[in-house]
Image 1: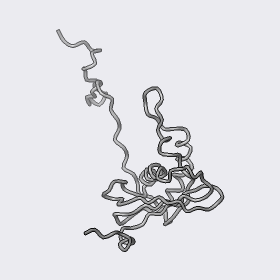
Image 2: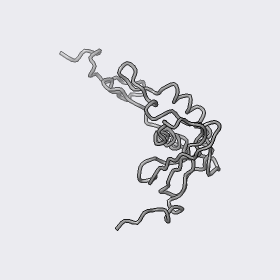
Image 3: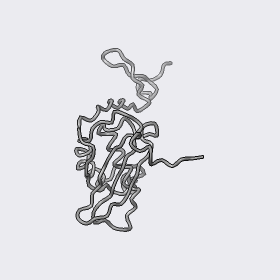
Image 4: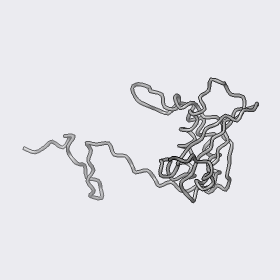
Length: 165
């Protein structure tokens, strides 16, 4: 007696003769990101939502928040205007400007912007191999809140590193 055709362990054959395992959900591999074609060394983007509000849980699943989706739609075209980094490692400098609440945690702006730099092809990846540090500072000021984003080559910062030992 054979396995019934509707059994979950049965492989389905496509028209081209390729077998597909129907027992697992398959994800298409992500397309390789193209490097940014931008030319700028610095851009100004809107303030992203707090890291705590990027992926809320709904129905037991994590999903992107509406606020984060709206920010990505505004900020990604601006981030894409930055020149693609050619020399690694780098440091990412984020300066929070404008009239923001003093209760705001400045460190919570990094995740959204770092992911945006990778998604827009400015950075290859945001791992330690490529990004040695992210520096978030509050620059003060008044007016509309924004973040100044700069990506600097590690060589520009040699004099700023503390010496150990």
